[in-house]
Structure formats: C-alpha cells, structure tokens
Length: 284
Image (cartoon, rainbow, N blue to C red; front, side, top):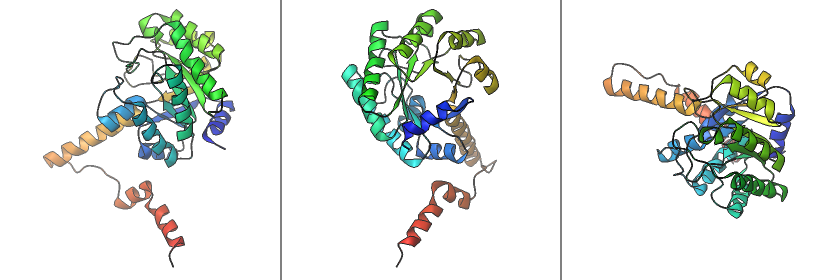
C-alpha cells in the first residue's frame, strides 16, 4: 500500500487518531519508533528547524517539499504535509498537490489565509474571500481526482478574522467540494469546538498547541465531540528546544551534566545496526 491507502485505512478504523508533529527525518523516525500510526510535518516546525525563522510564509514550496521527501523516505507510517496556501493560483495549487503526492505524503493541508500566511495561533492573520478559498480546495480536489493519490485536508482561519459562523460555513463548503478532511483552526472554547463538530460533517481535526488558543482536552472528550484526529504539531519541537537549552546551560556553567542517551542507544536510533546488517550482506 502507498501512503494515502494506509491513511484511508487508519481513518476508517474506530477511535480518534493521536498525531504528533515532526520537523525532520529523525523526529519522524522517533514518532514511528514510539508506536504512532501517523505523523504531521508542521510548517511552523520545519521553518524553525530548517531556517530558524518564524512561520510567516518565509519558507518556500521547494524547501517544504525537500524536507517532506526526506521525512517520508525515513518512515513507513503515513505523513501529513503542511502545504500552506498552495503557493499561488489554481495551477500552482495543483502542482503543489502533485508534488506532495510524488514526495510520498499521504495528505496535504491547504488553508485560506492570504499569502504570506502565518501560524494559526499568532496575531495578524487575514484570509482570502470565500470564492478564492473555494477555488483553492477545488483545484486541490481536481489534482487528486486527476491522479495525485493523496488526501486533501482543507483548513480555514476565518474564526480569527471573521467569526465562527463564517468559519463553519467555509468548512462545510470545503466538505461539499470534496475535501477528505476539514480543519477549523483555533476555536477558543469547548462550546465552539462542539458547535464545529456538530454542524460540519466528515473527518475533523483538533489542532492542539501548548498555551495556544484552543483548549487542550482529553482524547476521549475530543472523540466524544466528533473529532477524528488530534494533532500536536509543536510538542516535539518545543520539547527538543527545552532539552537543548538545558543541555547548553549545563555545558556552559559546568554545574550539571546534561542527561543524554548512551552512545549505543544513539547509534541504534539513527540506524547504525540496520546499516551494519546490510553491510554484512554484501561483504565478500
């Protein structure tokens, strides 16, 4: 099975899917080793990891595609990819969808922000008109239907720029167009989350960011509301920064020895044992 087929099977199973975010091949491998069935390549996390820059539309299509190809090649679980606004008009969006499918992604997320876009939980967002938002998702669905075997996740940020009514209207519109999954970004209360789940059909995503705008609810409660996917896009990036800061402080001050893996554990995680086994096969 390819990545999209694996993801369709996951979505068809009962229960909520808990999905960590990843930002490079190593973090994706750690997700798989930890037993997660799928992972999400976060544009915020890739921009921070690859460029050391904020998620404000500075990273390019080519950079995201290159990072995604490395991530997808490193694991066997299906990977969801952040496709930002699609990087242009309808033809650009179709090319973006096709490129993500060829890179090995199972699903691409596309949103209705004005380019350059920014993280959905930060200030200063704006969205395109409803017609252009619909055009983006229609182009993505057309690319899928014309042979790009990838699922389409349609995101709206209209809750922050307009109101919940407009966001729900857009989420329903995206579902009618044919998006496989819909995503209303940054509802600000349990009541808003429940209303979204009640009024919009199809698979729905809860985007859960530590100290973000959306309440961090237990998985069982999210599932009961009607969410199918609970994604934690920044948890690994956040935890890795804290760990690195602590290690650097310990090295600089000499007061604490940073807690690290043994060298054997480190080599196993990055794949030395697999490499040695393959190397032995071809030794004469």
